Length: 225
Length: 100
Picture 1 (cartoon, rainbow over the protein chains, first blue to last red):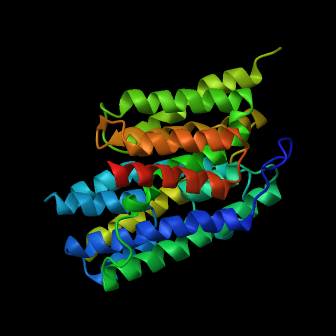
Picture 2: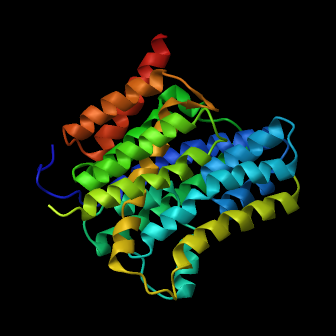
């Protein structure tokens, strides 16, 4: 067990754990993409340029179900939009001019944003962002290559419970927020919004709607004592 | 899926990412705004956890993932290291699927 009073320190290992787990899903994506009729180069370009796992699975899933390419892009957009919100929160963390941030932008995903937001200061947050973002990028793309060219060598990630590893990992990364009242309110209200809206709106939208949880959390943060 | 659709997807995905990071470049934001944006990750990640654990398309289900999350949360509460949290959650869910 770690020292209870020490803030969560970024360990490069943690970023790589996330990246490796994502890599297994990369294999699954490569397999599914090819099964849906994409060529291996198409699957690879998608993982290199789109680089948002949820959106990629959604787009390929829509095509697989007989949907139009337009519908595929639309579904993917709803899942990709939250990366814009993460970008807003990373604004105060990532320094540099437009060009540097134009490069950083490609690596703004759930995992890198979560890992950065768990750190105690800016330097640690930057390290966490780059290590996780680049690590996930490499493993996601290696996984895609393996799956698209080599087929299903690893097996279904769900057999290993890897789909449960991500939510648990995100809770671990939220822990520093959960120990402070505004962060706790943001998480509780955000989770509740998702729970209520999942049956009502298309995939991806519940997470966008959870942005509204910032309002009560902000009120709690600024309330005079 | 055509190359056009794939490139459209890439452009769409990247523009969201870029917009978030640069939209405020030439705006002087008050400290209160920075405080508010710092609360975005817990709000969105918590929603993501709910979707990843209880979501099945547009329905809600309780399955082996929920057990993994409960064990993972206990590990977080006990301040276990990140790797331990992730392995315990995955192991719990895998075990339940194996016996079910």
